Length: 635
Image (cartoon, rainbow, N blue to C red; front, side):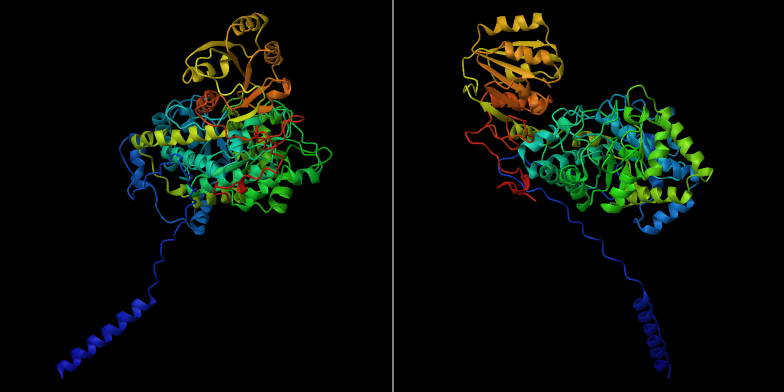
């Protein structure tokens, strides 16, 4: 009897246990993330993969402030309810602060920066070398650790967007100990999807190593105006198809590395003749032209899932007619065109609101609330000339007062803050952990990474013409090298590969005495190499080139390739797309015959050469579509 009783009790227990196990919710499997892998071309340097992230955050090389916050940082899986919980708990002051991405002064966590984070609750920071934020990689990593630690210990405890303009070429903020790539136009000259992916992958890896989570790239402006004073080399070129293909390749590569990017400058800044840092440009074209030229790269970026788009301080009468507003302040552009028509639901980020285009029009303080009313989410302030960080704080106070008075609804604020928090959530930024400063230094500017930058630069060099067969420089030839000495050291680059050179740096606008000296030097040498820098803006450079007519002359454009339009009769002309050391070294190696030139013109030279010209014996007049290039692993 006792035996049956025990057996019965055991049976009941087993049944109960089975029911419990059946009803217990299952743990979902960890989602598998497929990373974009750039196809490798043969005989090219290998991109060093970032080290795998450990489940335990490193502590070596951290400041005491960063180390103290590590144990308090949440590591929960991000969910929509998490964003709702954070948003619900925030005060209106904290919500308004999340809308601002600001610049600050100095290389460390100053009282000014601490106040911005703790009292103004800013949602993000933008670093600038000219503001003293950037000295070296270790200093930057420490600064970002300390700023983030302050953010997660104060207010709503929301980590910051930490951003920078690291475009490559003329717009780079990090140089010391960091891999500096050639310009986007140089990438356009390669026509290589693979190289665009590699550049983006390495830049993202190095930025993340230092603690950045947002790069304000890529530039998707179609540079089809040779007189554009601000885009130029920053663009992939004058082909909407090429800009879209290369830009999308970069966006996808950044996404694979978990880096937020901000495509710019919507709806397009490529066909302007005014720099929006100083004045208000206008794109006068009709809607059909905009749909065919300016808009396609942004449409493709949206289709590729670009997380954020930056606005342009540019007038578009075809979109906002009559007494229209610049795109940044125009609801017709931001809400009507970008949100409603193009279907973009990511972050709308403004270009710096203290730039001259807006500061001169509405004032840097009011620009923020006007942009917000128009539909912007993230209101950015940069290190613009004659402006200070105090303006962003005044803009915060102005916007806050309008919300508190009810003139701007808190529901509208919630809409943008939800997008901001959701973006931080989606990219894992709400689970911030400090970076290991020592490891960060070791992961940036590596030999493998620099080799990729050099390879891209060498693949970009374009011999537009060599009618006199002066290339390459011959062994035993004495060569006079003339260039604007303030824009890079072409002389040193050539001296590294050619034994007998005479170096003659001149001013950006060479005077009569300098030109006479060059002519005297040129009389006794085998060949003359003249480097020019935006010669169409500096007529004295053209005068120098023309004065050398009849001599064995090679002209190398050190910036934009349009210089040939200033002296179209020159027989030998090469484009390098930048004065960064990788581009000058690549140019020198082509001139010396160490590298075979492969680049093609990424822009049209009006009246001279078509888009895609290679300088070969036959014109390359085909449509320039990088994604169809053979052997490139194109998209």
